[in-house]
Image (cartoon, rainbow, N blue to C red; front, side, top):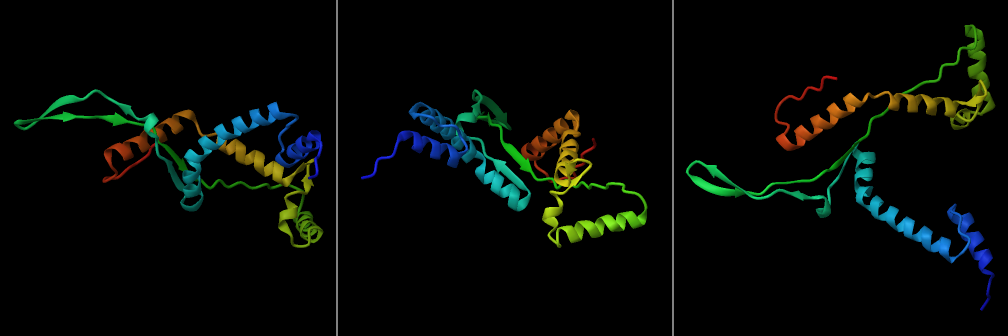
Length: 183
């Protein structure tokens, strides 16, 4: 049996995992944190898969999230009964396809044509490489990512709240009629 130094084990583990692990204590701490994260991820994994495939996913609440209200007596016609109410939060994920464009102004039409030709020739038809090219000291990828982030952050809090309230009403009261969202 070949025995390797523990330092080599921890260095290899750190390199392969991307986490800093220097000793048994670090390893145990990391495993504990990852186990917690995995437990949380397992709750949303199905919804993430659904939202990627269908555009909509639901995280069903667990029994520990169920809030039971006290039973109450109710009257219906001449008869009595008991109403048992419960509520629980559910998480709804909706995919929204956000569009953006980078449109650098380079001068006249000829200069724009030259830039398009340069980009296509430089990267030999591999458009994925174009996103790594720099313009104004930043890559196209960085410029597009920044614009997407700005668009996502622009949704006002009151619009988010109205969307949440509307979804709650649709689920609790049904969606048999016309639903109109006015922001």
